[in-house]
Image 1 (cartoon, rainbow, N blue to C red):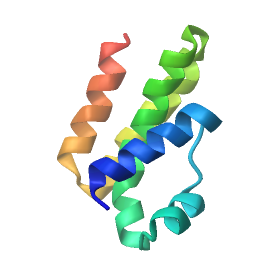
Image 2 (image 1 turned 90 degrees about the vertical axis):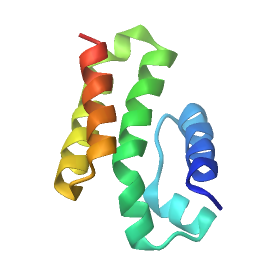
Image 3 (image 1 turned 30 degrees about the vertical axis):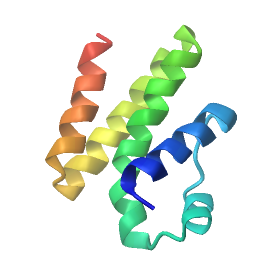
Image 4 (image 1 turned 180 degrees about the vertical axis):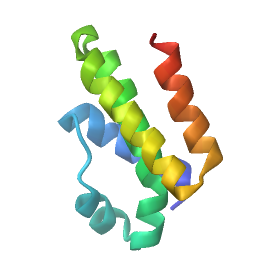
Length: 93
């Protein structure tokens, strides 16, 4: 399964449940811990985006998700996810 396919499935779960359980993703897609960790920043960012799409009063929760995504990406030294998280945060201000 490709990265994009996993993200599409994760977005579907986020829309249905409002969050993503990492153990559930691991089991559902047969992901190893390293790959799941690599997805973590992007999943937090997407969770923030979806919170804003579902209700405008979720701005504080979305900002928390964006900050978590940024912090995770920075700790992983993952520049693209870090930039996406920073852009999502800045775009909302």
